[in-house]
Length: 329
Image (cartoon, rainbow, N blue to C red):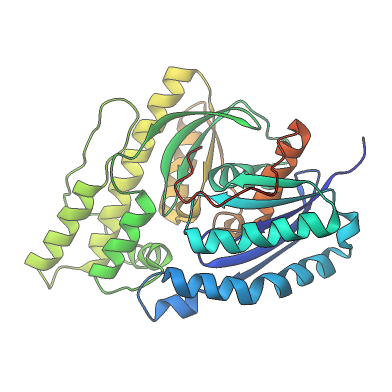
């Protein structure tokens, strides 16, 4: 079978990334231009600034990715891009550039769901991983339990009813003075503390999640007791989040009889959560997968990988492809 090379483009938030991936699993290049230092000044991502930076970065990042992979655009079999969910202006930059590239190079265009991309990151880390398996998707915008039936076929078993878990990390980090990005800073602070603060955990019927009550409890505690140990607060929050995620994941394993679980999304880089799921694997007959750290956050390699499986299925887009900020899986 001929090798299939996909150029992936990711611009859903504050990373401009372009990658070249062979056969969905082998990364030839994965260039990421991050805007974290810019948005740190504002305590979070400013959509208009993110969009303008994508416009400036997309072309040089693409050239760098092709150069690093040592290929020309003519060697590429398809152009994959994130078309949602995400910030509409940021998405439009990647989609517009991908459409122009597709038209100019006469290569098929493949619109990729960002969530599908996060799932596909595991295919890069684990060359032998194949569906069916369960995915716990935990990121800034999503918290979902997904049954991956096939490479392009998914069923959502449970999702958050309010805040996404990554969004909760960011909001709490901002309130207790850690700034942006909240997730990594909370993780680092929690390692200095003890999970000794009792916090309320909301148990939702079925496999859905709820984190707004936990978030509000922590914010109220911080306001009522300004001298509270922030490291202990962060550690207690991480412990409760991990317990909620583990509880629903174990229920999903029981309901589906599938014991392969892949973590995905930016929060899957959290050290406490990774450790908690590793312990679950050691205690029970469950296989745990999670992408290497650089593939947990937004990157184009995961989009190219997902694009490869859509390419095999013939799931191509036309030049009318548009950004869909609230795209569902």
